[in-house]
Length: 176
Image (cartoon, rainbow, N blue to C red; front, side, top):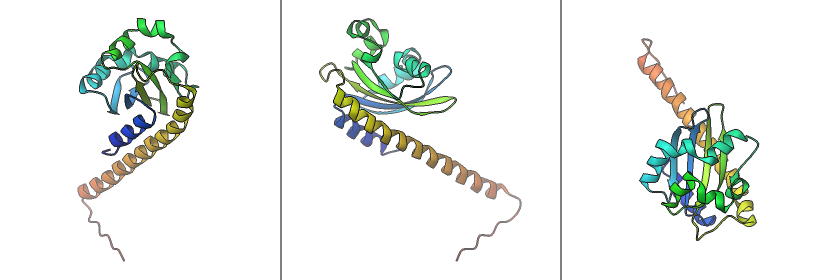
């Protein structure tokens, strides 16, 4: 877990981003279940978790369109629509305007999403940025899946040790 932020920092730099975020949402109510990022202030994370994960056009799009591996602003909004969006207006106060991202891992109840945020100065993503994100997305998805497996193994191991600790039967382990 301690290595995620530096990794996101590197990804953000490579993709000319202002910030990068990985988060999970509940597929039913769009609650933000967790998030980790590089470049976002605490107030962004708090407001996002409390309100904007539910309002995000991006989350809504990826829930409605499971066929999309990723999206970027111009796939669903033009500049005038961006200017009229409450979510984009909220992001603007953090210096964020543009985006490329989408689901890394989909489960029945949850979706883990990566979002690369860009400021107005960095501009909308280009064809080269989209190609680079496709490659980056593959690696991020693999890292998230590996992290999930490690968490599952850790929980299994912890559960096994708890069972042994709470057992009324003695256990002897012999190693060679």
